[in-house]
Image (cartoon, rainbow, N blue to C red; front, side, top):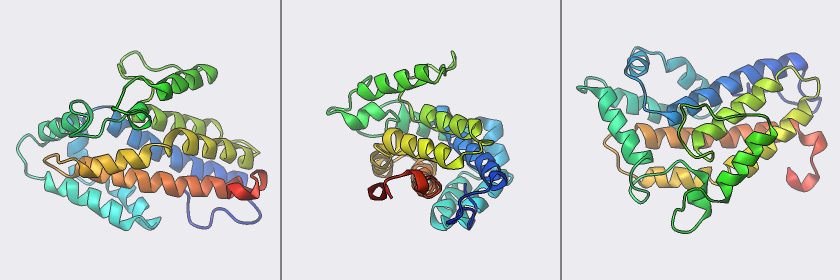
Length: 235
């Protein structure tokens, strides 16, 4: 995510914007993969061997120490558990695939409509956005278009596509609009539902808390970069 001090009254230099964009795209891609499917056995083994440490350290440096430490503790709780990847897969199913009341379904429509209805207006809007941006859902991803993993993947793509732009303020304005309109309109409710759920391990509730903190911080960052183009009441 953005480095401290990267934005100022003088704006963001092209080099700094490109560097920070690479970091931000990596983070959104990482979260997207964790919500798209169960954590593979090899990936979990990598995390246990310290593979997640650089990412978590980066979050701590940005002031998200408690959220990063909570996710680290959740990973440590899986250490030594027999068939840990299967236990985590069971938590994934409980949280995101089964019961809307006992879990936290990762679809925007669930949080926009009464009765946790799937395929609501949010799904239609996301399909229209993807079509307008000439983006397509991968054939092997059999989920509605308003799945959280897709929003995060799109954000990663937006960041990557604008990493080399000479107009970082305009790129930041568009990214801020997407975060605020398409993601933050329901992510806090998804996080609240995640904290109410009771999976065996804390990995997914901790992940939701960290994701929400990261997105809120990133939205603040892009608003700051876009400040010259935004009305005063939007800051």
